[in-house]
Length: 355
Image (tube, rainbow, N blue to C red):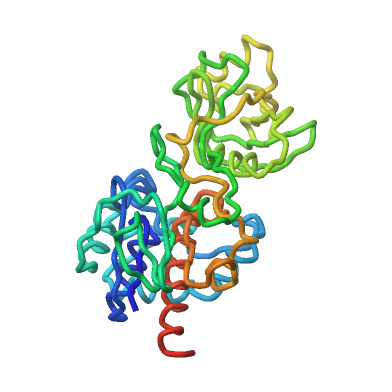
Protein backbone atom coordinates (compact mmCIF):
# COMPACT_ATOMS: atom_id res chain seq x y z
CA UNK A 1 0.00 0.00 0.00
CA UNK A 2 1.30 3.44 -0.96
CA UNK A 3 -0.54 6.69 -0.30
CA UNK A 4 -0.11 9.96 -2.20
CA UNK A 5 -0.92 12.99 -0.02
CA UNK A 6 -1.48 16.34 -1.73
CA UNK A 7 -0.91 19.22 0.68
CA UNK A 8 1.41 19.73 3.66
CA UNK A 9 -0.87 21.82 5.82
CA UNK A 10 -2.31 20.80 9.17
CA UNK A 11 -4.21 17.74 7.96
CA UNK A 12 -1.59 16.55 5.46
CA UNK A 13 1.27 16.82 7.95
CA UNK A 14 -0.60 15.04 10.73
CA UNK A 15 -1.67 12.26 8.38
CA UNK A 16 1.95 11.77 7.32
CA UNK A 17 3.07 11.42 10.95
CA UNK A 18 0.32 8.85 11.56
CA UNK A 19 1.18 6.82 8.45
CA UNK A 20 4.81 6.80 9.64
CA UNK A 21 3.71 5.24 12.93
CA UNK A 22 1.52 2.71 11.09
CA UNK A 23 4.40 1.81 8.72
CA UNK A 24 2.28 2.68 5.70
CA UNK A 25 4.27 3.95 2.72
CA UNK A 26 3.42 7.43 1.41
CA UNK A 27 4.66 10.47 -0.48
CA UNK A 28 3.74 14.00 0.62
CA UNK A 29 3.47 16.77 -1.98
CA UNK A 30 3.17 20.49 -1.36
CA UNK A 31 3.42 23.68 -3.40
CA UNK A 32 4.63 26.72 -1.49
CA UNK A 33 5.07 27.21 2.23
CA UNK A 34 4.71 24.12 4.42
CA UNK A 35 2.35 24.44 7.40
CA UNK A 36 1.11 27.89 6.40
CA UNK A 37 -2.11 27.82 8.47
CA UNK A 38 -0.34 26.34 11.49
CA UNK A 39 2.19 29.17 11.48
CA UNK A 40 -0.50 31.84 11.09
CA UNK A 41 -2.86 30.45 13.71
CA UNK A 42 -3.41 32.45 16.87
CA UNK A 43 -1.12 35.25 15.66
CA UNK A 44 1.82 32.85 15.80
CA UNK A 45 0.74 31.23 19.07
CA UNK A 46 -1.06 28.35 17.28
CA UNK A 47 -4.67 28.07 18.42
CA UNK A 48 -4.38 24.35 17.83
CA UNK A 49 -7.86 23.25 18.95
CA UNK A 50 -10.72 23.98 21.33
CA UNK A 51 -11.53 22.15 24.55
CA UNK A 52 -15.10 21.43 23.41
CA UNK A 53 -17.29 21.76 20.34
CA UNK A 54 -20.95 21.83 19.41
CA UNK A 55 -22.80 21.43 16.15
CA UNK A 56 -23.47 25.16 15.74
CA UNK A 57 -19.71 25.86 15.77
CA UNK A 58 -19.64 24.03 12.41
CA UNK A 59 -22.93 25.45 11.10
CA UNK A 60 -24.70 22.21 12.03
CA UNK A 61 -22.66 20.17 9.57
CA UNK A 62 -23.34 16.48 10.36
CA UNK A 63 -20.20 15.14 8.65
CA UNK A 64 -17.96 17.48 10.64
CA UNK A 65 -19.58 16.35 13.88
CA UNK A 66 -19.26 12.67 12.92
CA UNK A 67 -15.51 13.11 12.36
CA UNK A 68 -15.08 15.04 15.61
CA UNK A 69 -17.15 12.58 17.65
CA UNK A 70 -14.98 9.74 16.33
CA UNK A 71 -11.52 11.26 16.74
CA UNK A 72 -11.67 14.15 19.22
CA UNK A 73 -10.37 12.27 22.28
CA UNK A 74 -7.88 10.32 20.18
CA UNK A 75 -6.41 13.59 18.88
CA UNK A 76 -5.18 14.74 22.27
CA UNK A 77 -3.79 11.31 23.08
CA UNK A 78 -1.97 11.46 19.76
CA UNK A 79 -0.69 14.98 20.47
CA UNK A 80 0.78 13.66 23.73
CA UNK A 81 2.49 10.82 21.85
CA UNK A 82 4.10 13.42 19.57
CA UNK A 83 5.06 15.50 22.64
CA UNK A 84 2.75 18.35 21.64
CA UNK A 85 1.56 19.43 25.08
CA UNK A 86 -1.33 21.86 25.28
CA UNK A 87 -2.99 24.34 27.60
CA UNK A 88 -6.21 26.33 27.31
CA UNK A 89 -7.26 29.90 27.97
CA UNK A 90 -10.36 31.08 29.82
CA UNK A 91 -12.51 30.71 26.71
CA UNK A 92 -11.43 27.14 25.94
CA UNK A 93 -9.01 27.96 23.12
CA UNK A 94 -6.11 25.51 23.18
CA UNK A 95 -2.46 26.31 22.48
CA UNK A 96 0.87 24.53 22.78
CA UNK A 97 2.44 25.34 26.13
CA UNK A 98 5.23 27.09 24.22
CA UNK A 99 2.63 29.39 22.60
CA UNK A 100 4.66 28.98 19.42
CA UNK A 101 3.25 27.87 16.07
CA UNK A 102 6.79 27.14 14.92
CA UNK A 103 7.28 24.60 17.70
CA UNK A 104 4.17 22.67 16.58
CA UNK A 105 5.36 22.67 12.97
CA UNK A 106 8.85 21.59 14.04
CA UNK A 107 7.46 18.61 15.95
CA UNK A 108 5.27 17.49 13.05
CA UNK A 109 8.18 17.74 10.62
CA UNK A 110 10.46 15.88 13.04
CA UNK A 111 8.03 12.95 12.92
CA UNK A 112 8.01 12.84 9.12
CA UNK A 113 11.02 10.90 7.89
CA UNK A 114 10.47 11.48 4.18
CA UNK A 115 11.24 14.62 2.22
CA UNK A 116 8.22 16.70 1.25
CA UNK A 117 8.11 16.96 -2.54
CA UNK A 118 7.85 20.63 -3.57
CA UNK A 119 5.50 20.31 -6.52
CA UNK A 120 2.23 21.84 -7.68
CA UNK A 121 -0.10 19.02 -8.65
CA UNK A 122 -1.88 19.67 -11.94
CA UNK A 123 -3.41 16.28 -12.68
CA UNK A 124 -4.38 12.96 -11.11
CA UNK A 125 -4.57 10.07 -13.55
CA UNK A 126 -5.14 6.35 -13.11
CA UNK A 127 -3.69 3.40 -14.97
CA UNK A 128 -4.27 -0.25 -14.14
CA UNK A 129 -5.84 0.62 -10.80
CA UNK A 130 -2.94 2.87 -9.72
CA UNK A 131 -2.80 6.66 -9.46
CA UNK A 132 -0.20 9.07 -10.81
CA UNK A 133 0.33 12.79 -10.21
CA UNK A 134 1.26 15.00 -13.16
CA UNK A 135 1.49 11.84 -15.23
CA UNK A 136 4.68 10.53 -13.65
CA UNK A 137 4.69 10.63 -9.83
CA UNK A 138 3.44 7.34 -8.42
CA UNK A 139 2.13 4.74 -8.51
CA UNK A 140 -0.23 5.17 -5.53
CA UNK A 141 -2.95 2.88 -4.23
CA UNK A 142 -4.68 5.68 -2.34
CA UNK A 143 -4.85 9.44 -2.87
CA UNK A 144 -5.59 11.96 -0.13
CA UNK A 145 -6.63 15.51 -1.01
CA UNK A 146 -5.37 17.79 1.76
CA UNK A 147 -4.81 20.96 -0.24
CA UNK A 148 -6.68 23.26 2.11
CA UNK A 149 -8.15 26.41 0.60
CA UNK A 150 -6.77 29.65 -0.81
CA UNK A 151 -7.28 31.57 2.45
CA UNK A 152 -4.20 33.64 3.39
CA UNK A 153 -2.81 33.32 -0.15
CA UNK A 154 -1.93 36.25 -2.37
CA UNK A 155 -2.72 36.20 -6.07
CA UNK A 156 -2.08 34.24 -8.21
CA UNK A 157 -3.83 31.50 -6.25
CA UNK A 158 -2.86 27.86 -6.46
CA UNK A 159 -4.96 26.06 -9.03
CA UNK A 160 -7.56 23.54 -7.86
CA UNK A 161 -8.40 22.53 -11.44
CA UNK A 162 -7.05 19.02 -10.92
CA UNK A 163 -9.82 18.47 -8.34
CA UNK A 164 -12.48 19.74 -10.75
CA UNK A 165 -11.03 17.37 -13.35
CA UNK A 166 -12.02 14.46 -11.11
CA UNK A 167 -15.60 15.21 -12.13
CA UNK A 168 -16.85 16.19 -8.68
CA UNK A 169 -18.79 19.25 -7.60
CA UNK A 170 -16.54 21.93 -6.12
CA UNK A 171 -18.18 24.95 -4.50
CA UNK A 172 -16.29 28.20 -5.15
CA UNK A 173 -14.18 29.47 -2.28
CA UNK A 174 -15.28 32.64 -0.50
CA UNK A 175 -13.30 34.34 2.30
CA UNK A 176 -14.40 33.61 5.86
CA UNK A 177 -13.06 34.62 9.28
CA UNK A 178 -12.09 37.93 7.73
CA UNK A 179 -12.75 41.63 8.25
CA UNK A 180 -15.65 43.57 6.74
CA UNK A 181 -15.28 46.45 4.31
CA UNK A 182 -17.64 49.29 5.11
CA UNK A 183 -19.68 51.75 3.08
CA UNK A 184 -19.71 54.33 5.87
CA UNK A 185 -16.63 56.53 6.34
CA UNK A 186 -15.14 55.55 9.69
CA UNK A 187 -11.54 56.71 9.18
CA UNK A 188 -11.87 58.99 12.22
CA UNK A 189 -11.93 55.86 14.42
CA UNK A 190 -9.11 54.05 12.59
CA UNK A 191 -6.76 52.25 14.99
CA UNK A 192 -9.21 52.28 17.89
CA UNK A 193 -10.39 49.12 19.62
CA UNK A 194 -13.50 48.57 21.71
CA UNK A 195 -15.41 45.84 23.51
CA UNK A 196 -18.84 45.70 21.90
CA UNK A 197 -21.92 43.65 21.28
CA UNK A 198 -21.78 43.14 17.52
CA UNK A 199 -24.82 42.10 15.48
CA UNK A 200 -24.95 40.97 11.85
CA UNK A 201 -28.19 42.33 10.42
CA UNK A 202 -29.91 41.69 7.11
CA UNK A 203 -33.18 43.37 6.19
CA UNK A 204 -33.62 44.46 9.84
CA UNK A 205 -33.28 40.85 11.07
CA UNK A 206 -30.45 39.80 13.40
CA UNK A 207 -28.58 36.92 11.75
CA UNK A 208 -26.01 36.49 14.50
CA UNK A 209 -24.63 38.49 17.41
CA UNK A 210 -21.70 38.10 19.76
CA UNK A 211 -19.77 40.09 22.35
CA UNK A 212 -16.10 40.81 21.76
CA UNK A 213 -13.48 43.25 20.56
CA UNK A 214 -13.80 45.23 17.34
CA UNK A 215 -10.86 46.93 15.62
CA UNK A 216 -11.53 49.94 13.40
CA UNK A 217 -9.63 50.46 10.15
CA UNK A 218 -9.72 53.21 7.53
CA UNK A 219 -12.24 51.34 5.41
CA UNK A 220 -13.41 48.46 7.54
CA UNK A 221 -13.72 46.62 10.84
CA UNK A 222 -11.96 43.53 12.16
CA UNK A 223 -11.32 41.58 15.36
CA UNK A 224 -12.38 38.09 16.48
CA UNK A 225 -16.03 39.06 16.97
CA UNK A 226 -16.15 40.53 13.46
CA UNK A 227 -14.48 37.43 12.02
CA UNK A 228 -17.19 35.28 13.57
CA UNK A 229 -19.84 37.54 12.07
CA UNK A 230 -18.09 37.18 8.71
CA UNK A 231 -18.33 33.38 8.91
CA UNK A 232 -22.11 33.69 9.21
CA UNK A 233 -22.06 36.25 6.39
CA UNK A 234 -20.22 33.71 4.20
CA UNK A 235 -23.09 31.25 4.68
CA UNK A 236 -25.78 33.70 3.56
CA UNK A 237 -27.19 33.01 0.10
CA UNK A 238 -27.80 36.72 -0.48
CA UNK A 239 -25.29 39.36 0.58
CA UNK A 240 -27.69 42.27 0.01
CA UNK A 241 -28.71 44.81 2.68
CA UNK A 242 -26.11 43.77 5.26
CA UNK A 243 -25.25 45.94 8.25
CA UNK A 244 -23.24 45.48 11.42
CA UNK A 245 -24.65 47.06 14.56
CA UNK A 246 -22.24 47.89 17.39
CA UNK A 247 -23.40 48.48 20.96
CA UNK A 248 -20.56 49.99 22.99
CA UNK A 249 -22.15 49.48 26.41
CA UNK A 250 -23.94 46.13 26.02
CA UNK A 251 -27.36 47.73 26.41
CA UNK A 252 -26.50 49.52 29.65
CA UNK A 253 -27.19 53.26 29.92
CA UNK A 254 -24.77 55.73 31.49
CA UNK A 255 -25.18 59.40 32.35
CA UNK A 256 -21.72 60.03 30.90
CA UNK A 257 -19.81 57.69 28.54
CA UNK A 258 -16.41 59.38 28.97
CA UNK A 259 -15.02 56.51 31.08
CA UNK A 260 -16.85 53.84 29.07
CA UNK A 261 -15.84 54.50 25.46
CA UNK A 262 -12.44 55.44 24.04
CA UNK A 263 -12.16 59.18 23.23
CA UNK A 264 -11.59 58.63 19.50
CA UNK A 265 -14.76 56.53 19.23
CA UNK A 266 -16.80 58.71 21.58
CA UNK A 267 -15.91 61.84 19.60
CA UNK A 268 -17.04 60.14 16.39
CA UNK A 269 -20.35 59.15 17.98
CA UNK A 270 -20.93 62.66 19.33
CA UNK A 271 -19.92 64.39 16.09
CA UNK A 272 -22.36 62.23 14.13
CA UNK A 273 -25.09 62.22 16.81
CA UNK A 274 -25.03 58.42 17.12
CA UNK A 275 -26.42 56.57 20.12
CA UNK A 276 -23.65 54.48 21.81
CA UNK A 277 -26.02 51.50 21.69
CA UNK A 278 -26.54 51.58 17.96
CA UNK A 279 -23.76 52.41 15.54
CA UNK A 280 -25.04 50.91 12.28
CA UNK A 281 -22.34 50.25 9.68
CA UNK A 282 -23.44 49.24 6.15
CA UNK A 283 -21.22 46.47 4.77
CA UNK A 284 -19.95 46.47 1.19
CA UNK A 285 -18.23 43.09 1.42
CA UNK A 286 -15.25 41.38 3.04
CA UNK A 287 -11.51 41.71 2.58
CA UNK A 288 -9.77 39.50 0.02
CA UNK A 289 -8.57 35.91 0.52
CA UNK A 290 -5.14 37.17 1.57
CA UNK A 291 -6.65 38.45 4.83
CA UNK A 292 -8.96 35.49 5.51
CA UNK A 293 -8.17 32.75 8.01
CA UNK A 294 -10.33 30.13 6.26
CA UNK A 295 -12.70 29.77 3.33
CA UNK A 296 -16.28 28.75 2.87
CA UNK A 297 -16.48 26.39 -0.10
CA UNK A 298 -14.59 23.37 -1.37
CA UNK A 299 -15.59 19.84 -2.31
CA UNK A 300 -19.35 19.57 -2.03
CA UNK A 301 -20.26 17.10 0.70
CA UNK A 302 -22.75 15.35 -1.57
CA UNK A 303 -19.63 14.03 -3.33
CA UNK A 304 -18.18 12.47 -0.16
CA UNK A 305 -18.91 9.25 1.74
CA UNK A 306 -19.12 9.16 5.53
CA UNK A 307 -15.56 7.77 5.63
CA UNK A 308 -14.31 10.87 3.69
CA UNK A 309 -13.69 8.93 0.48
CA UNK A 310 -15.17 10.26 -2.74
CA UNK A 311 -18.38 8.59 -3.87
CA UNK A 312 -16.98 8.59 -7.39
CA UNK A 313 -13.78 6.81 -6.33
CA UNK A 314 -13.44 5.16 -2.92
CA UNK A 315 -9.63 5.19 -3.19
CA UNK A 316 -9.49 9.00 -3.12
CA UNK A 317 -10.06 10.74 0.22
CA UNK A 318 -10.55 14.40 1.08
CA UNK A 319 -9.91 15.99 4.46
CA UNK A 320 -9.47 19.33 6.16
CA UNK A 321 -10.36 22.63 4.56
CA UNK A 322 -10.58 21.33 0.98
CA UNK A 323 -13.96 19.97 2.08
CA UNK A 324 -16.84 22.45 2.21
CA UNK A 325 -16.68 22.50 6.01
CA UNK A 326 -15.79 25.59 8.00
CA UNK A 327 -16.25 26.82 11.53
CA UNK A 328 -16.13 29.93 13.68
CA UNK A 329 -12.94 31.33 15.20
CA UNK A 330 -11.36 29.69 18.25
CA UNK A 331 -9.34 26.69 17.08
CA UNK A 332 -12.29 24.85 15.55
CA UNK A 333 -10.95 24.82 11.99
CA UNK A 334 -7.56 23.38 12.95
CA UNK A 335 -9.41 20.95 15.22
CA UNK A 336 -11.36 19.62 12.25
CA UNK A 337 -8.25 19.51 10.05
CA UNK A 338 -6.36 17.41 12.60
CA UNK A 339 -9.25 15.09 13.50
CA UNK A 340 -10.09 14.50 9.84
CA UNK A 341 -6.48 13.37 9.29
CA UNK A 342 -6.78 10.79 12.07
CA UNK A 343 -10.15 9.75 10.64
CA UNK A 344 -8.68 9.08 7.18
CA UNK A 345 -5.67 7.29 8.69
CA UNK A 346 -8.05 5.03 10.58
CA UNK A 347 -9.98 4.26 7.38
CA UNK A 348 -6.80 3.37 5.48
CA UNK A 349 -5.53 1.24 8.37
CA UNK A 350 -8.86 -0.61 8.59
CA UNK A 351 -8.82 -1.36 4.88
CA UNK A 352 -5.31 -2.79 5.07
CA UNK A 353 -6.27 -4.97 8.04
CA UNK A 354 -9.51 -6.04 6.35
CA UNK A 355 -11.83 -4.55 8.98
